[in-house]
Length: 193
Image (cartoon, rainbow, N blue to C red):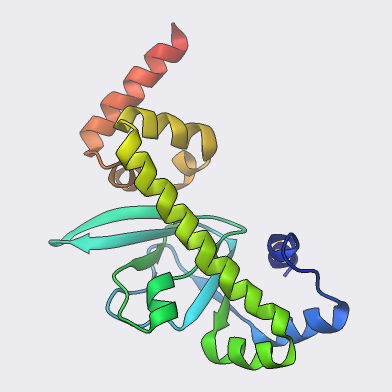
């Protein structure tokens, strides 16, 4: 709960009574490593908040998984288009390691916002965060080489390299595992020289 309150604190501050209402409206769920959290084709009715663990967003393209993003502690997860417009989602979410999430169920969010209108902001924050992450990934693919994307990921989220299997990192960067290996070798050589 503390992580969640810290994540929303820049946007809203809750009093003790409001925190209690929020606590009663959420569900805490655990997912085992490699367990699917949400699958494409379904309509998203939940918003998630990562308390512990790592989650991979991926798309299935012609039978191949293509990683779109990684979520770690303190981040919201929301299949934004599906949640907002009630259309089947195209994305999947999978726990990469044992993961604990806070789940905001749509029905509970609606009930809670009647009692506490400022809570609606949580849903908006989650959807906006998803949009911003998506825009950053798109911009990165348009403006940067795979090597530059690798260095950026290394600088911004170095811990992912310890937590995420290399094939998912390669997929996220849009390269084969072999190309990722060559990129890593080039970066290491550059650092040592």
